[in-house]
Amino acid sequence: MERDDIQQSLKLFIVLSRAHRSINDKVNSFIAEKGLNMTEFGVLELLYHKGDQPLQQIGGKILLASGSITYVVDKLEQKEYLTRIACKTDRRVTFASITEKGKAFIESIFPEHEARIHEMMSVLTASERETAINLLKKIGLNADGK
Image (cartoon, rainbow, N blue to C red; front, top):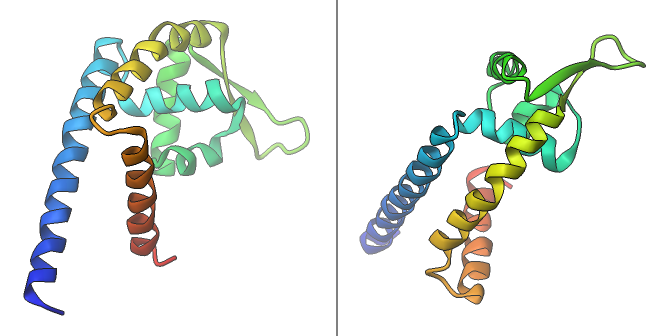
C-alpha cells in the first residue's frame, strides 16, 4: 500500500465524517424543534411508512440498540404517538403501532423534513447523487465484510 493511498483514505474518512456530522446536526436541530429526538422520529417514521412493527425488530431497522427501544417506545406512548399491541398468535411478541395523533404529527412535519434533506443533497446533480449512493453503499458493505 502506498502512503498516498493511505493518506487519501484517511482524508476520505474525515471528509465523510464531517459531512455526516453537518447533515445530522441540521436534521437533529429541526427534529428537536418539533419536540422529538432523532430516535423517536426514526421510530415514528418507520411506523408511518412501514406499518406496525414488532418491538424486537425496530432497533435493527433504525440502527438502535435493542435495550433503548423500550425507553423510546415508552416516551412515544406517553406523547400518544404510538401504542403497543399484543400479537394474537405469539404472546412473546408486541407490536408498536402509530396512532392517529402520531400520523398527524408526522404528516405535519415530514414534508419540511423531506424538503430540508433534498435542499442539502441538491448541491449534487441527480446523477452525482446516484453515484454517491452507489459508492457509499460499496464502502458500507466492505466495512461490514460483505
